[in-house]
Amino acid sequence: MDVDEPPVLEHRLAGRSALVRWGVRAWLLVGVLLAAAAVAWLLGQLSGLVVPLVLAAVLGALLAPVVDRLERHRVPRIGGATAVLLGLGAVVAGSVWLVVAGVVEQAPQISAQLRAGFDSLSGWLETRGIDIASGSLDDQAGGVAEVALDGIPGLLPGVFSSTASFLIGAVIAVFLLYYVLTDWDALTGWVGGHLGVSAEVGTQVVSDTVDSLRRYFWSLTLSAVVTAVLIGGAALVLGVPLVLTIALITLTTSYIPYLGAIFSGAFATLIALGSNGIETALVLLAVILVVQNVIQTVVLARLSSTALRLHPIVTIGSTIVGAAFAGVLGATLGTPATAAALLVHRRLSAAGSAPVAEAVGPTLDNDGG
Image (tube, rainbow, N blue to C red; front, side, top):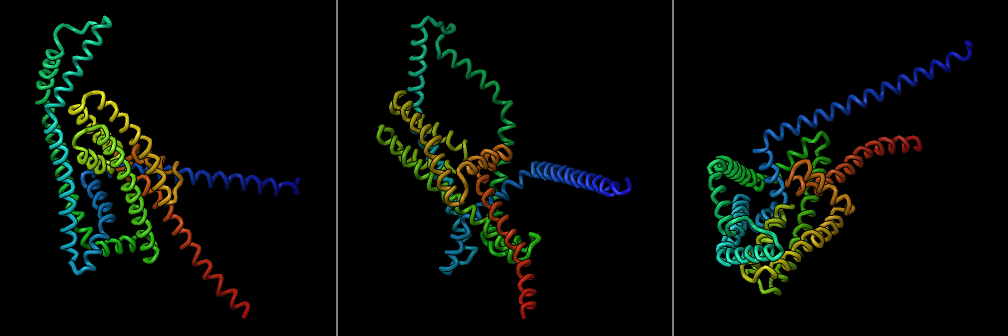
């Protein structure tokens, strides 16, 4: 019995040690989850500052090469950053103007086509024995309009609050973007030097992240061009007016996941409805659904997967996960963030193994000497 006791004791001690290790790991995991939840809650409370900061950082990473090129042509960074901001503002203002002008121009035709469509629907239902409530559709529409007008005063505070928040966030983002563009090298150097690794490795980590962003948005731009050409070409073939406006709106809204596709598709369909009737509008709508939901998704997944060296499933999955956690912003940055995380992991792994190799090398040389 005395001979068998030490192995039994060692086995029990080993079991307790493994249990202690798993317990420590479980508590560490709980701590990490709690810390992540606390960070997410804090970011949610500071979303009015965090979202503009993220947008400024992303736009700065994309537009900094333009300022660098202007600087090489002897344009000061302040002047280059100002020119880039003015150009970006002109693009945004031009896009909004095209949308408003197109809707205003086609408003009478759209109204007439909608009225004709309602009348056709009413007649089709009545021929099949479906009685529409007393009064014409015009009367019912008027009643709905009255109810909507009665509810507008209650919506105004929320609308004004959302508009004010958007404007304040936009102003903050513009100021942050200006300073990001003017001090790009200093900011990236500072971030790289405060990542808890050596300054050289930190600079490489920042470079990998910026490179992933630029590659992804370059792929997104190519897919947006393909989408705009296909939808604009379909509108041209169908004889829909404002083809250039439809193509430009499709191109610019392609950078906004989900909501951009809905907005551009609704705009093009309304223009087709107002100018060519319901048949043309339905055909164009079918083309838009196929292009935006099938062709653009496949093209973007393929291009971004090639540029970022990710599998298409990872690309689509990261977009879905990003949308679930952070909405539109998360959907936009999910794929480049995943690619950047993988690159950073490889970079840190390589940096962690390098000192070991350097330490082993001289020892072998000394032994051999």
